[in-house]
Image (cartoon, rainbow, N blue to C red; front, side):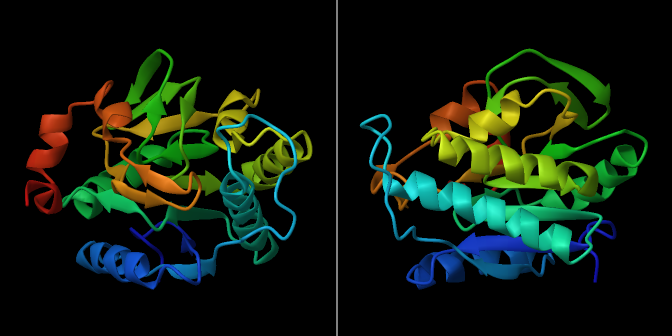
Length: 225
C-alpha cells in the first residue's frame, strides 16, 4: 500500500541493537498509518581514520545507510520513497497534512522533500504547504524522487570517499536538485542518545530556531508529557 496514497515505499533506518528505539518509532508510525520497511543500519567495519575530531565512525555508518537504502529503492524500481531515521518524532497531524502535500507535490518538478530540517538559507513558498530552499541539514525524514536517487546516493558515497562525514550538507549543496520542505514542520529528532555522535544529543533548538516550536509541540502530544 502506498504511503499517503503516493509514495511507493517507506523505510526506517535502524541499527540492529536499537530495539527500544525501533519500538518507539513504530508506535509513532502506527499512529500515522505508516507501514515502513525496516532497513538495518550499517556499522562500518573500517571506521574513518581522518576527518574532523568531533565526527565519529557513526557518521560514516549513517551516510552509508542512507546511500544503501536509496540504492535499494532504485534497484527495486520505486518511483519515489519516504526515508526516516529511527529517532524521528512526528506531529500528530502528519498524515492529514501529507495528504495535502502530495497533491501539491504532483504539480512540481521535485527531487527531495524534507519533512523536517535545520534550515540554513532563505526559502521561497511555491505551494501552500511547500517551500523551496538552498541549504539545510539533517536527513531524519525526507522523500526522494527516482530521478534524484542515483545522484544523491553518489553524492553521499563521494562525501565518504573524501572523509567528509557531513553527508547531509553534501546532499543539500548538490547543484540542480529541486529541494523543498513542508510547511508546517512535520518531523524533528528525538532528544537522546545518538549512535552517530556516540553521546546524548538534543537538536530541538536547531529546528525551532527557524520554525515555530510552540506550534509544533501544540500538535505533538508526545512532547507535551
